[in-house]
Image (cartoon, rainbow, N blue to C red; front, side, top):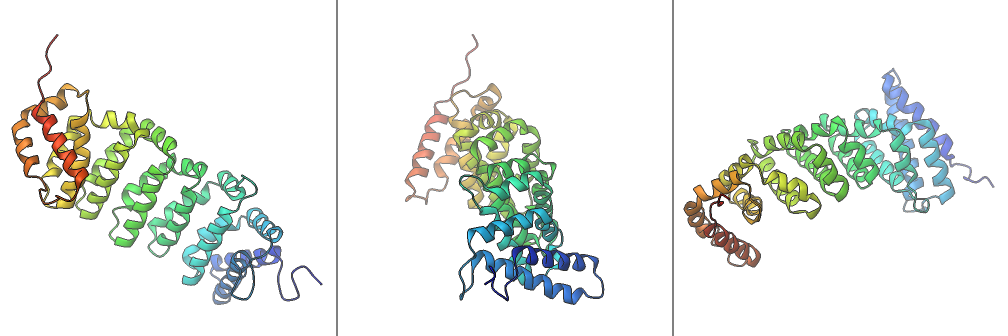
Length: 336
């Protein structure tokens, strides 16, 4: 009795057949329709090996290991992603499912696919560039967020020049793509705390000059999401150095004070959570203190009337009372 039964192809055969079909699709020759069918059919075979079907269990570890090895050796993962736009709708979803399953594979504490992608970072860069193409953006996003769970892969993405394209992707006109890109962007900046803090410290000027544009965006959703994320980044204790630098810049304080007066209550509320960090800082630089002193009375009056209907939100009211008290007690720096 052969290992795979009579009708079942071995991993090597399926991978070979799929690679030939993708290559034919890429060439776009006369047999493109047949190639499209073969791609779909072989993707389903691979997916069934990994996930099983209603009638059959997933394949044994040894067969999955052979399949993974064939995928690595054939360079098929990159080829599939490079040709994702040529694959049909169901096939695109199957590529993402196969990719994410193979990525999660572990042998003891090792993740062989993560190690493999570290040697082929082009896979990550091709996925990131997927946000440029409407028809594959969401599939690429699914795979990117799975990659971002692994610190080694997140590091390659963060430290690549391509990372800064996210500042553009989160503003694209198609809402679901912009939202998806923002989810990936947020994941990369928040998941691995120490990695993210180091990245932000090293690239502070570049990141925050780009970030400023998001906060000033004409798109309401972009402004609100980026303001909320800014609050989370500044309040994360791992980012203490970054926070200290951000709240020492008077331009940042002026921006937040303006955002407190925005028409949108949601933006006012998110701005409050960034503004409070400036006020709570026990070591305010003179330019920051000067701005707060110049606006002392106005700020006390403004905050007293600020979102008074949030009576249920105890934490907000405590913070607001604390800020009012801090601002009332501000005094100019005494010259020594």
